Length: 232
Image (cartoon, rainbow, N blue to C red; front, side, top):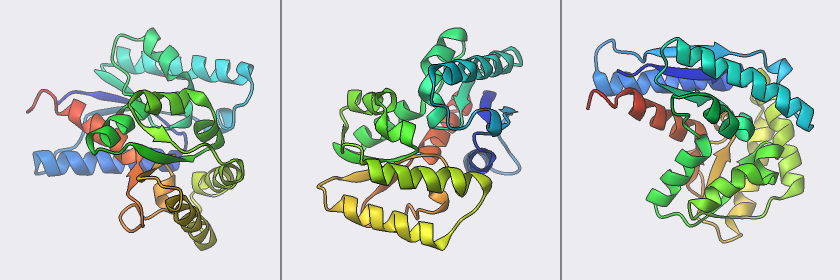
């Protein structure tokens, strides 16, 4: 199996989801006591969260780029950043390493295109849902997206940062997101993209009126495919 390098801690709750999902899928695919060969650098998210200025993003880029280089030197055959929002600097990091970087928006776009989804709504942190750097990658895959809703983005951002990223799952937040999904369904879309790797903690991806595409699961599926690329 290929060794994968994960850049995590953004937040630790989503990194835990990645680790569990990847290893469970490897065990299903390979059987027995098999598990994934993973190198992990887990960051202190206090140093990285809610970046807004160019200076803050420059500091984050340098920190994550160093992680990618260390993972590559340690033997990682590919790199994955375990957070949607941190892909803000993914293109620059990809240029700093020889190993491929598995971009979360690209694999999400590929999955929707494969399933014939042409129009979707994106839910996630404010920088993912309102800025062009993430949305444009999906549009390039042929996915039309609903315009960002500022009020919804603010509330989802609050739920993610103030609750999910510290491990809190609240019933009222579950109800709020279910209401958002119900309202989105009225806007002639075919699916919803969970553009935050923690959102599946409060959104039941299997029991909603619209198909829900979980970016964490789709990203992890792509990671597993690469890990097993020499075994199939």
